[in-house]
Amino acid sequence: QVQLVESGGGLVQPGGSLRLSCAASGRIFSVDAMAWYRQDPEKKRELVARTTSRGTTDYVDSAKGRFTISMDGTKNTAYLQMNDLKPEDAAVYYCNALIRDISGYLTNYWGRGTQVTVSS
Image (tube, rainbow, N blue to C red; front, side, top):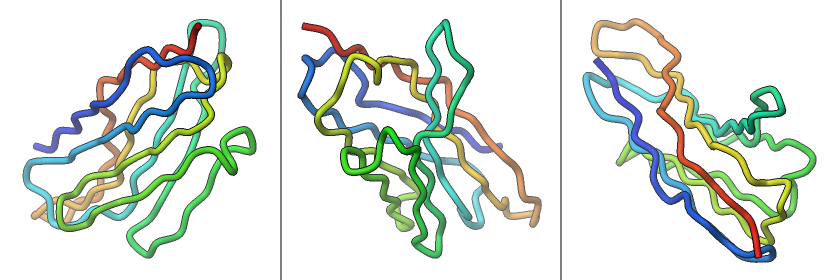
């Protein structure tokens, strides 16, 4: 089995920064891609940022220039550096990973989420 564990959420003032981490563990052969999604109670879950093992990255327009996603393949860990946070960034942030296990199966996994609150 594979598990994703997120950390780094919390309360921050507008304009502040947070760094989210997502560590994948278990019977992992390779991590093909990792991504961060977010959801607040009034909106659908949306893709915030995504990165692949080849180093490609994608961002939702509202995150461009403020957020940076990265992945450390040696640690099977993804990071989301969030700067200049705005109240509309507040949400539960979920880690998502496309992982090939040691049996060769490619599976999409989700973490349990970490709360980000942006308020003065």
